[in-house]
Image 1 (cartoon, one colour):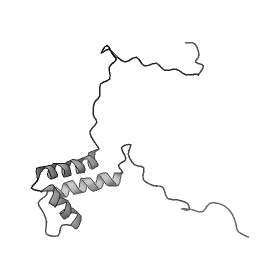
Image 2 (cartoon, rainbow, N blue to C red; image 1 turned 180 degrees about the vertical axis):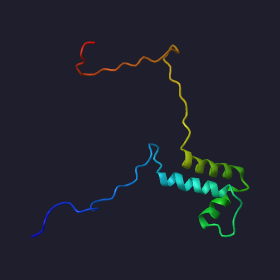
Image 3 (tube, rainbow, N blue to C red; image 1 turned 120 degrees about the vertical axis):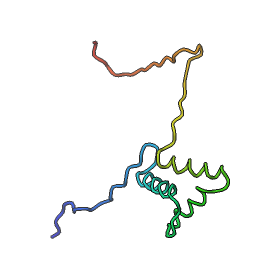
Image 4 (cartoon, helix red, strand yellow; image 1 turned 90 degrees about the vertical axis):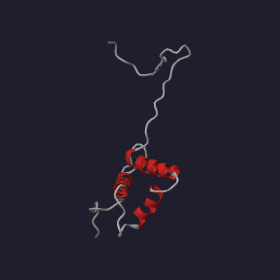
Length: 107
């Protein structure tokens, strides 16, 4: 008769959790390796991936160069945050009101 119970290492394997901005650690590591390789002089036995990125990294068109570097640096470091300032109609602070149905004890 079969015996029940869980089996070791059975079931779905855990997936790596992405960062809050959607990047995984593998994306960050791959971008870091690419940037490191592209900042060095080209080698004879360079991988096809690095050679393909090098064409864009060292392109004659400065716009292509900038966009390539922005893409790889954003993959490695995450996109820069943009500061926003919110004010009320009279340029004063914004009043925030929270309402709840929780019964709070008297302080």
